[in-house]
Amino acid sequence: VNVRTGEREQFSEVRSGVGFKSNSSLVLNFGVGDAEIIDELRVEWPLGGDTILYDVPVNQRLVIQKGEKPLMDRAPVAR
Image (cartoon, rainbow, N blue to C red; front, side, top):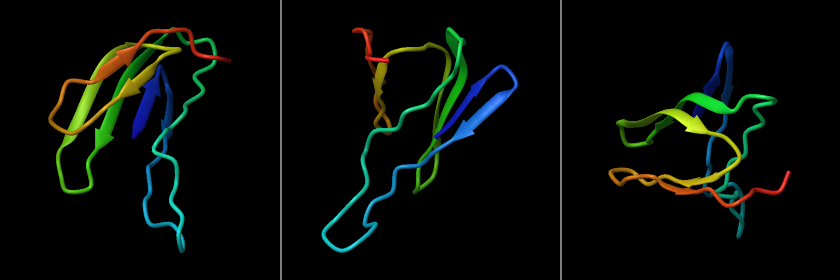
């Protein structure tokens, strides 16, 4: 997942099968400072294709699944 706010770009990934009887979180968090909008959020799927969202408001939870409309939870997010 790539997140771009202005000139700043961040990258993180969800990884599965990290170790014996364990896995990593399916939740990614990005700190965007004083930005109020994420200019571009790009999910690159492992088997090809991408999901791109533009002008995404910050301080919310998004659930993104390939081929489906993203679910946005605009309830206040703890800081």
